[in-house]
Length: 95
Image 1 (cartoon, rainbow, N blue to C red):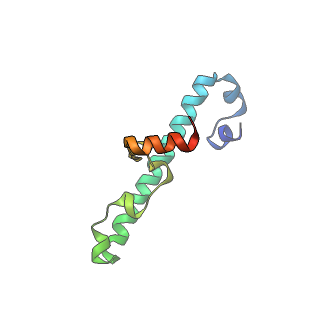
Image 2 (cartoon, helix red, strand yellow):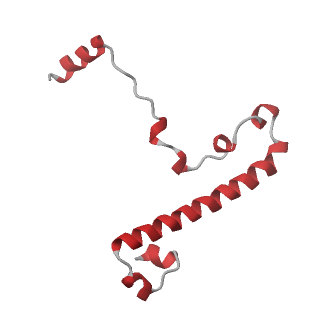
């Protein structure tokens, strides 16, 4: 309920929402906050870019100023095991 008050909902508005509507409201609130952070990062990046070393000037915004929510699970690379590695693990864990 605290997040509802932080997002600007009154008590009556909070109790009139269904759980789905509240979830959608919070999702929209979080998306708006993310966009505000991204705008601040955009402004900061171009403000500091002229003062960076030449090697850092070619780096993108998301590398210089990363956000926690940008750590996408899709970027995780899964290494496929070879048959020998698989057999070693089977012996180690006895399955």
